[in-house]
Length: 434
Image (cartoon, rainbow, N blue to C red; front, side, top):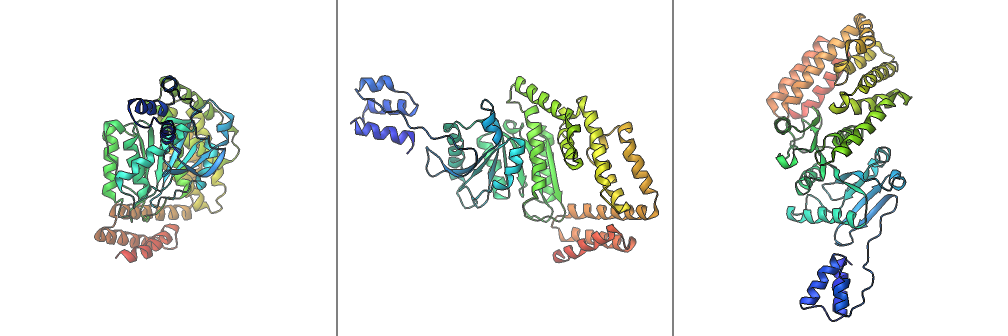
């Protein structure tokens, strides 16, 4: 029973269910006060019922206290119990069928100390004007249960209709939303009220819902409003959920950048996050596993406020050394060269100073001097050029034919190479679109 319904029941039992005094007392009861009015009425009130705080870890279903038609899943990281004064960022997951799965995100959320919320029932089949009731109901229930969710660090994620509902959620709660992941959806309503929201676009050229023109519009909108944007857009991906490692990469970026730039956080809070990130960057050298050390370094270096810190130079060097260590796992010299070259040409490698890049560049040059490696790299360059044509083609049949022809040229010009093998697979895949 909701607080309002409980209050009304008390008044009816006392014979005060109607009239000015009853109406006034009802409102006071709903606000959690009303003792003075109750005394006037000669009514002794029992304690107002309050919903229980959720238990630690994962809760399969919580029914909202004030609206029994609203329910959600919840995960509280272990840090929640150990830090009782802290408000935690949250990731809100929605699903086009109204069945959000947050279990797959739990390990990540535990490591990043994030609250997970999966809003149930909101689906593609629900009328649009009915959805805000559920969003407001879940947010109100978290507040009524005193769950320490940070009021301005909420991030939404979902696939297809779930992503679209995340975008709509940000319209209802613009100040509370810090980031929106658009997965399988190519639209966002840009406005000054939401210009602080970080955006990520995840999809592919074989998805009719997120074609290249839609990607261009998102890029233009974020550029106009000064919104940070990350895009993962693959030529062969259709209307499907992105791999979990890609989702974690995007969420890591949002979780790291938003507390540094969100305009609704106080100067003191942003400064505290900056200092915390600075300390974490300084501890990167303590991470033994090269893959994890590289991932953590990239998380910080992808955020401009952190890339400008003095600690960033050490982070870039540690990133370089991690890349070199990872490359040793590649037995084939051509594959090792490609791994190093792609890292060097990527977002982090491109920003290395000449001194920082020296060991990496020398290793690349040594490998590139081998004829078999040079031949392999030429095939990869040609294959990537054809992939870019396919990406820009979207579902346009004539443009796909041009991409198919480009792949054919790679197969003919670079036989028995990695690039030729990949191009042949791409041609087989494109056949069903021609």
